[in-house]
Length: 321
Image 1 (tube, rainbow, N blue to C red):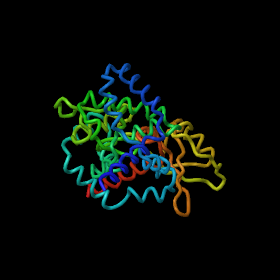
Image 2: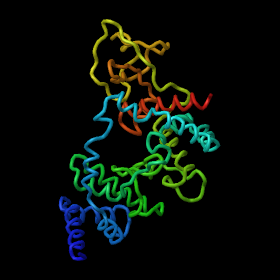
Image 3: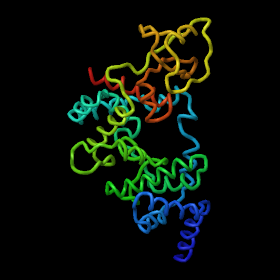
Image 4: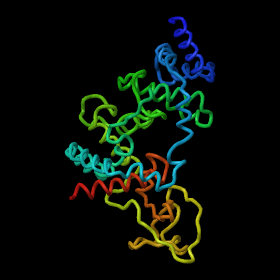
């Protein structure tokens, strides 16, 4: 029985690495050590304990943003429980949220909604070992191998710099970590040590996580007290437009001339993007402003940005009751 179990374990280990080019792995280890002044043997020890997981590749191939319509995607996040959870989170961490919002210019409800969408306020920070996720995607996901190889390198730098366990840290199937689900490169660049304890801990320290989400938005150009979106209407002879880029590229006047308008009086020269979202029986049209684009820097999806915005609005409304 013991021999059979050992054989199965060895076979499982072989299968998990069978699709990985070991020469590429070796080159990665050497380059990462040389480029970041890290100990090559220490990196090799970590990488040798990483496992390729097919479930990670499967998850990458079916993200909700690409498979679901807006009304289906929206229903995931705009639930009473998540809205009430946002109010509870806000109340519990109000002092930190007020301080961070005042300094960054990012509204409290947006910060709360991001953490709500990403991890349900810390309730689901991910069950995959980050090292496994990044290893799998770096060496057996060709279409994004370059991106995830870089993130794996940044993860190794991060764990060394912030004294985080490279083998025990868990996150999403894409390697995102903590309350706000930061990728390693974003963690290194935007994380904040809010409580000044000498460590930027986005995994367990909620104050650091809150400040870091706000800092991410501030660094990407969030404009204080400006709108995120305005709902639009169409005229009978409106021009049908293809899906627009996330970055605003049309003026309000241009969209007005094509049959799209907003009840709010907007600057005719303001740059916007037209966001089209599919409800069950009709389409919704929105003018996405600069701050809407900033939200998409967190996740490059208009549905994601709209879910964050609408969850934020619902949380704020309930908090004010």
